[in-house]
Image 1 (cartoon, one colour):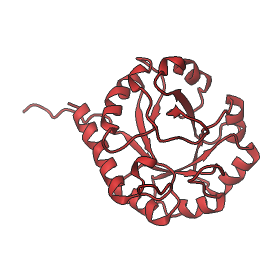
Image 2 (spheres, helix red, strand yellow):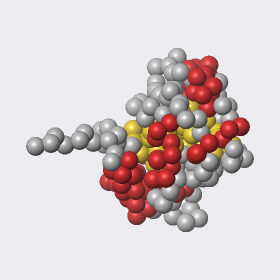
Image 3 (cartoon, helix red, strand yellow):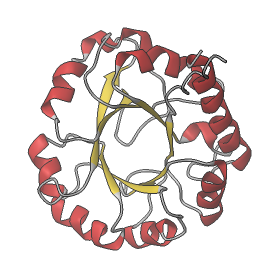
Length: 232
């Protein structure tokens, strides 16, 4: 009997910008790997550190809370980490490698560094150089460069990324249940491993920070379907 082929990579999934208990519960029920809590006061999805801690306490084992910051004072980042002890951090502003290390207690806590890819022309951004500047990052998160910070819900041109990036990547920016499979097919061959991160693509229409449980389940199902297809 011919042995079964090993399964292909399982894409990790993060739902970001959660503000309500029922949305945390819906994400967990759908089988996500992480939730994102935005601690950037100018964001429409902002939650205060104490609120982030309340939401994070609902998570079961092996689902990771991710705290998103934009150019925040390292002391405030460390204070938030005291409230959410098991969090991963995500830096989405202009943080230098030194800033990231200071805010993670000298690299004691895992972090993601967001790379802001120009819309329509990823060739205008040197992702290889950027990733090389942050060797201690757990992954580089790819998002579209829009006005302001914290993510704009717009996709960039995935096909213009470098053909080989020696880093773990997280694909973000304008993902939906309809397009996430295409993004995975474009980006997964270009990196060590790929994860995906969605926020506005699973929200109730016109309601930032309020998620639609049906869209969350559709998104997770689309990722799993793409995993199966890419494993063939």
